[in-house]
Amino acid sequence: MTARNVLVTGGNRGIGKSIAEAMAAAGHHVVVTTRTGAAPEGLQAVTGDVTDTASVDAAFAAAEAIFGGPVEVVVANAGITKDGLLMRMSDADFDAVLDTNLAGSFRCARRASAGMIKKRFGRLIFISSVVGLYGGPGQSNYSASKSGLVGLARSITRELGGRGITANVVAPGFIETDMTSQLPEERQKAYKAAIPAGRFATPDEVAAAVLFLASDEAAYISGAVIPVDGGLGMGH
Image (cartoon, helix red, strand yellow):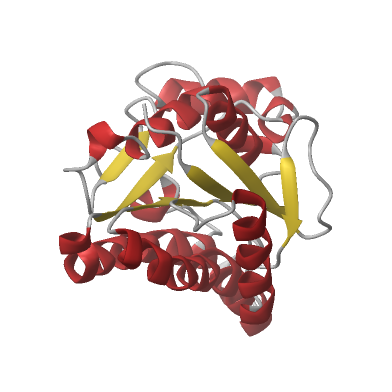
């Protein structure tokens, strides 16, 4: 394994934190972005807000200073939800989710691309969701933002694929988190009944897919959508 310089956005909790910890455990050099700059235990952090270009630039510059070189792997994980029925969803709630989840990932990819082109190596990994292709009631903004990551990754692949840079999407389904554990037991049973695997994923299972896509062995995989959803989406 080649140790790489890895930047994980929104790496202070949940899936992002699990990804960052798995990357670090595998021997990579890892920095996470958080809005406050506070680092989870055992990780290094820089302040970064993916909705602001200047903040993204500053976060990358700070990470590059820590690494002593360019960012080689970007895991665009930072995301928000503002669910609501279509008829009642405000422009502000739609725009905020697209700006964070989709445009934020674009800003990070754009900033990373110059260093990756020079190095002729790069891994851009976008964290989407089964909802991005499967859809979800009350989630038109979230679903649109997560679906857009597929087009982003595939366009980057066609543009930069000849430079040793890959761009892929990981689409998790239901994950064991604080949020899902608080769901009523009947609701959890109903969700699990719809999942062929019959259970929720662990954050570590999502991290394992990301770890592989970041590896040298995944050099010929680009523009792909890797579902980690227990069969829920069936490729949709």
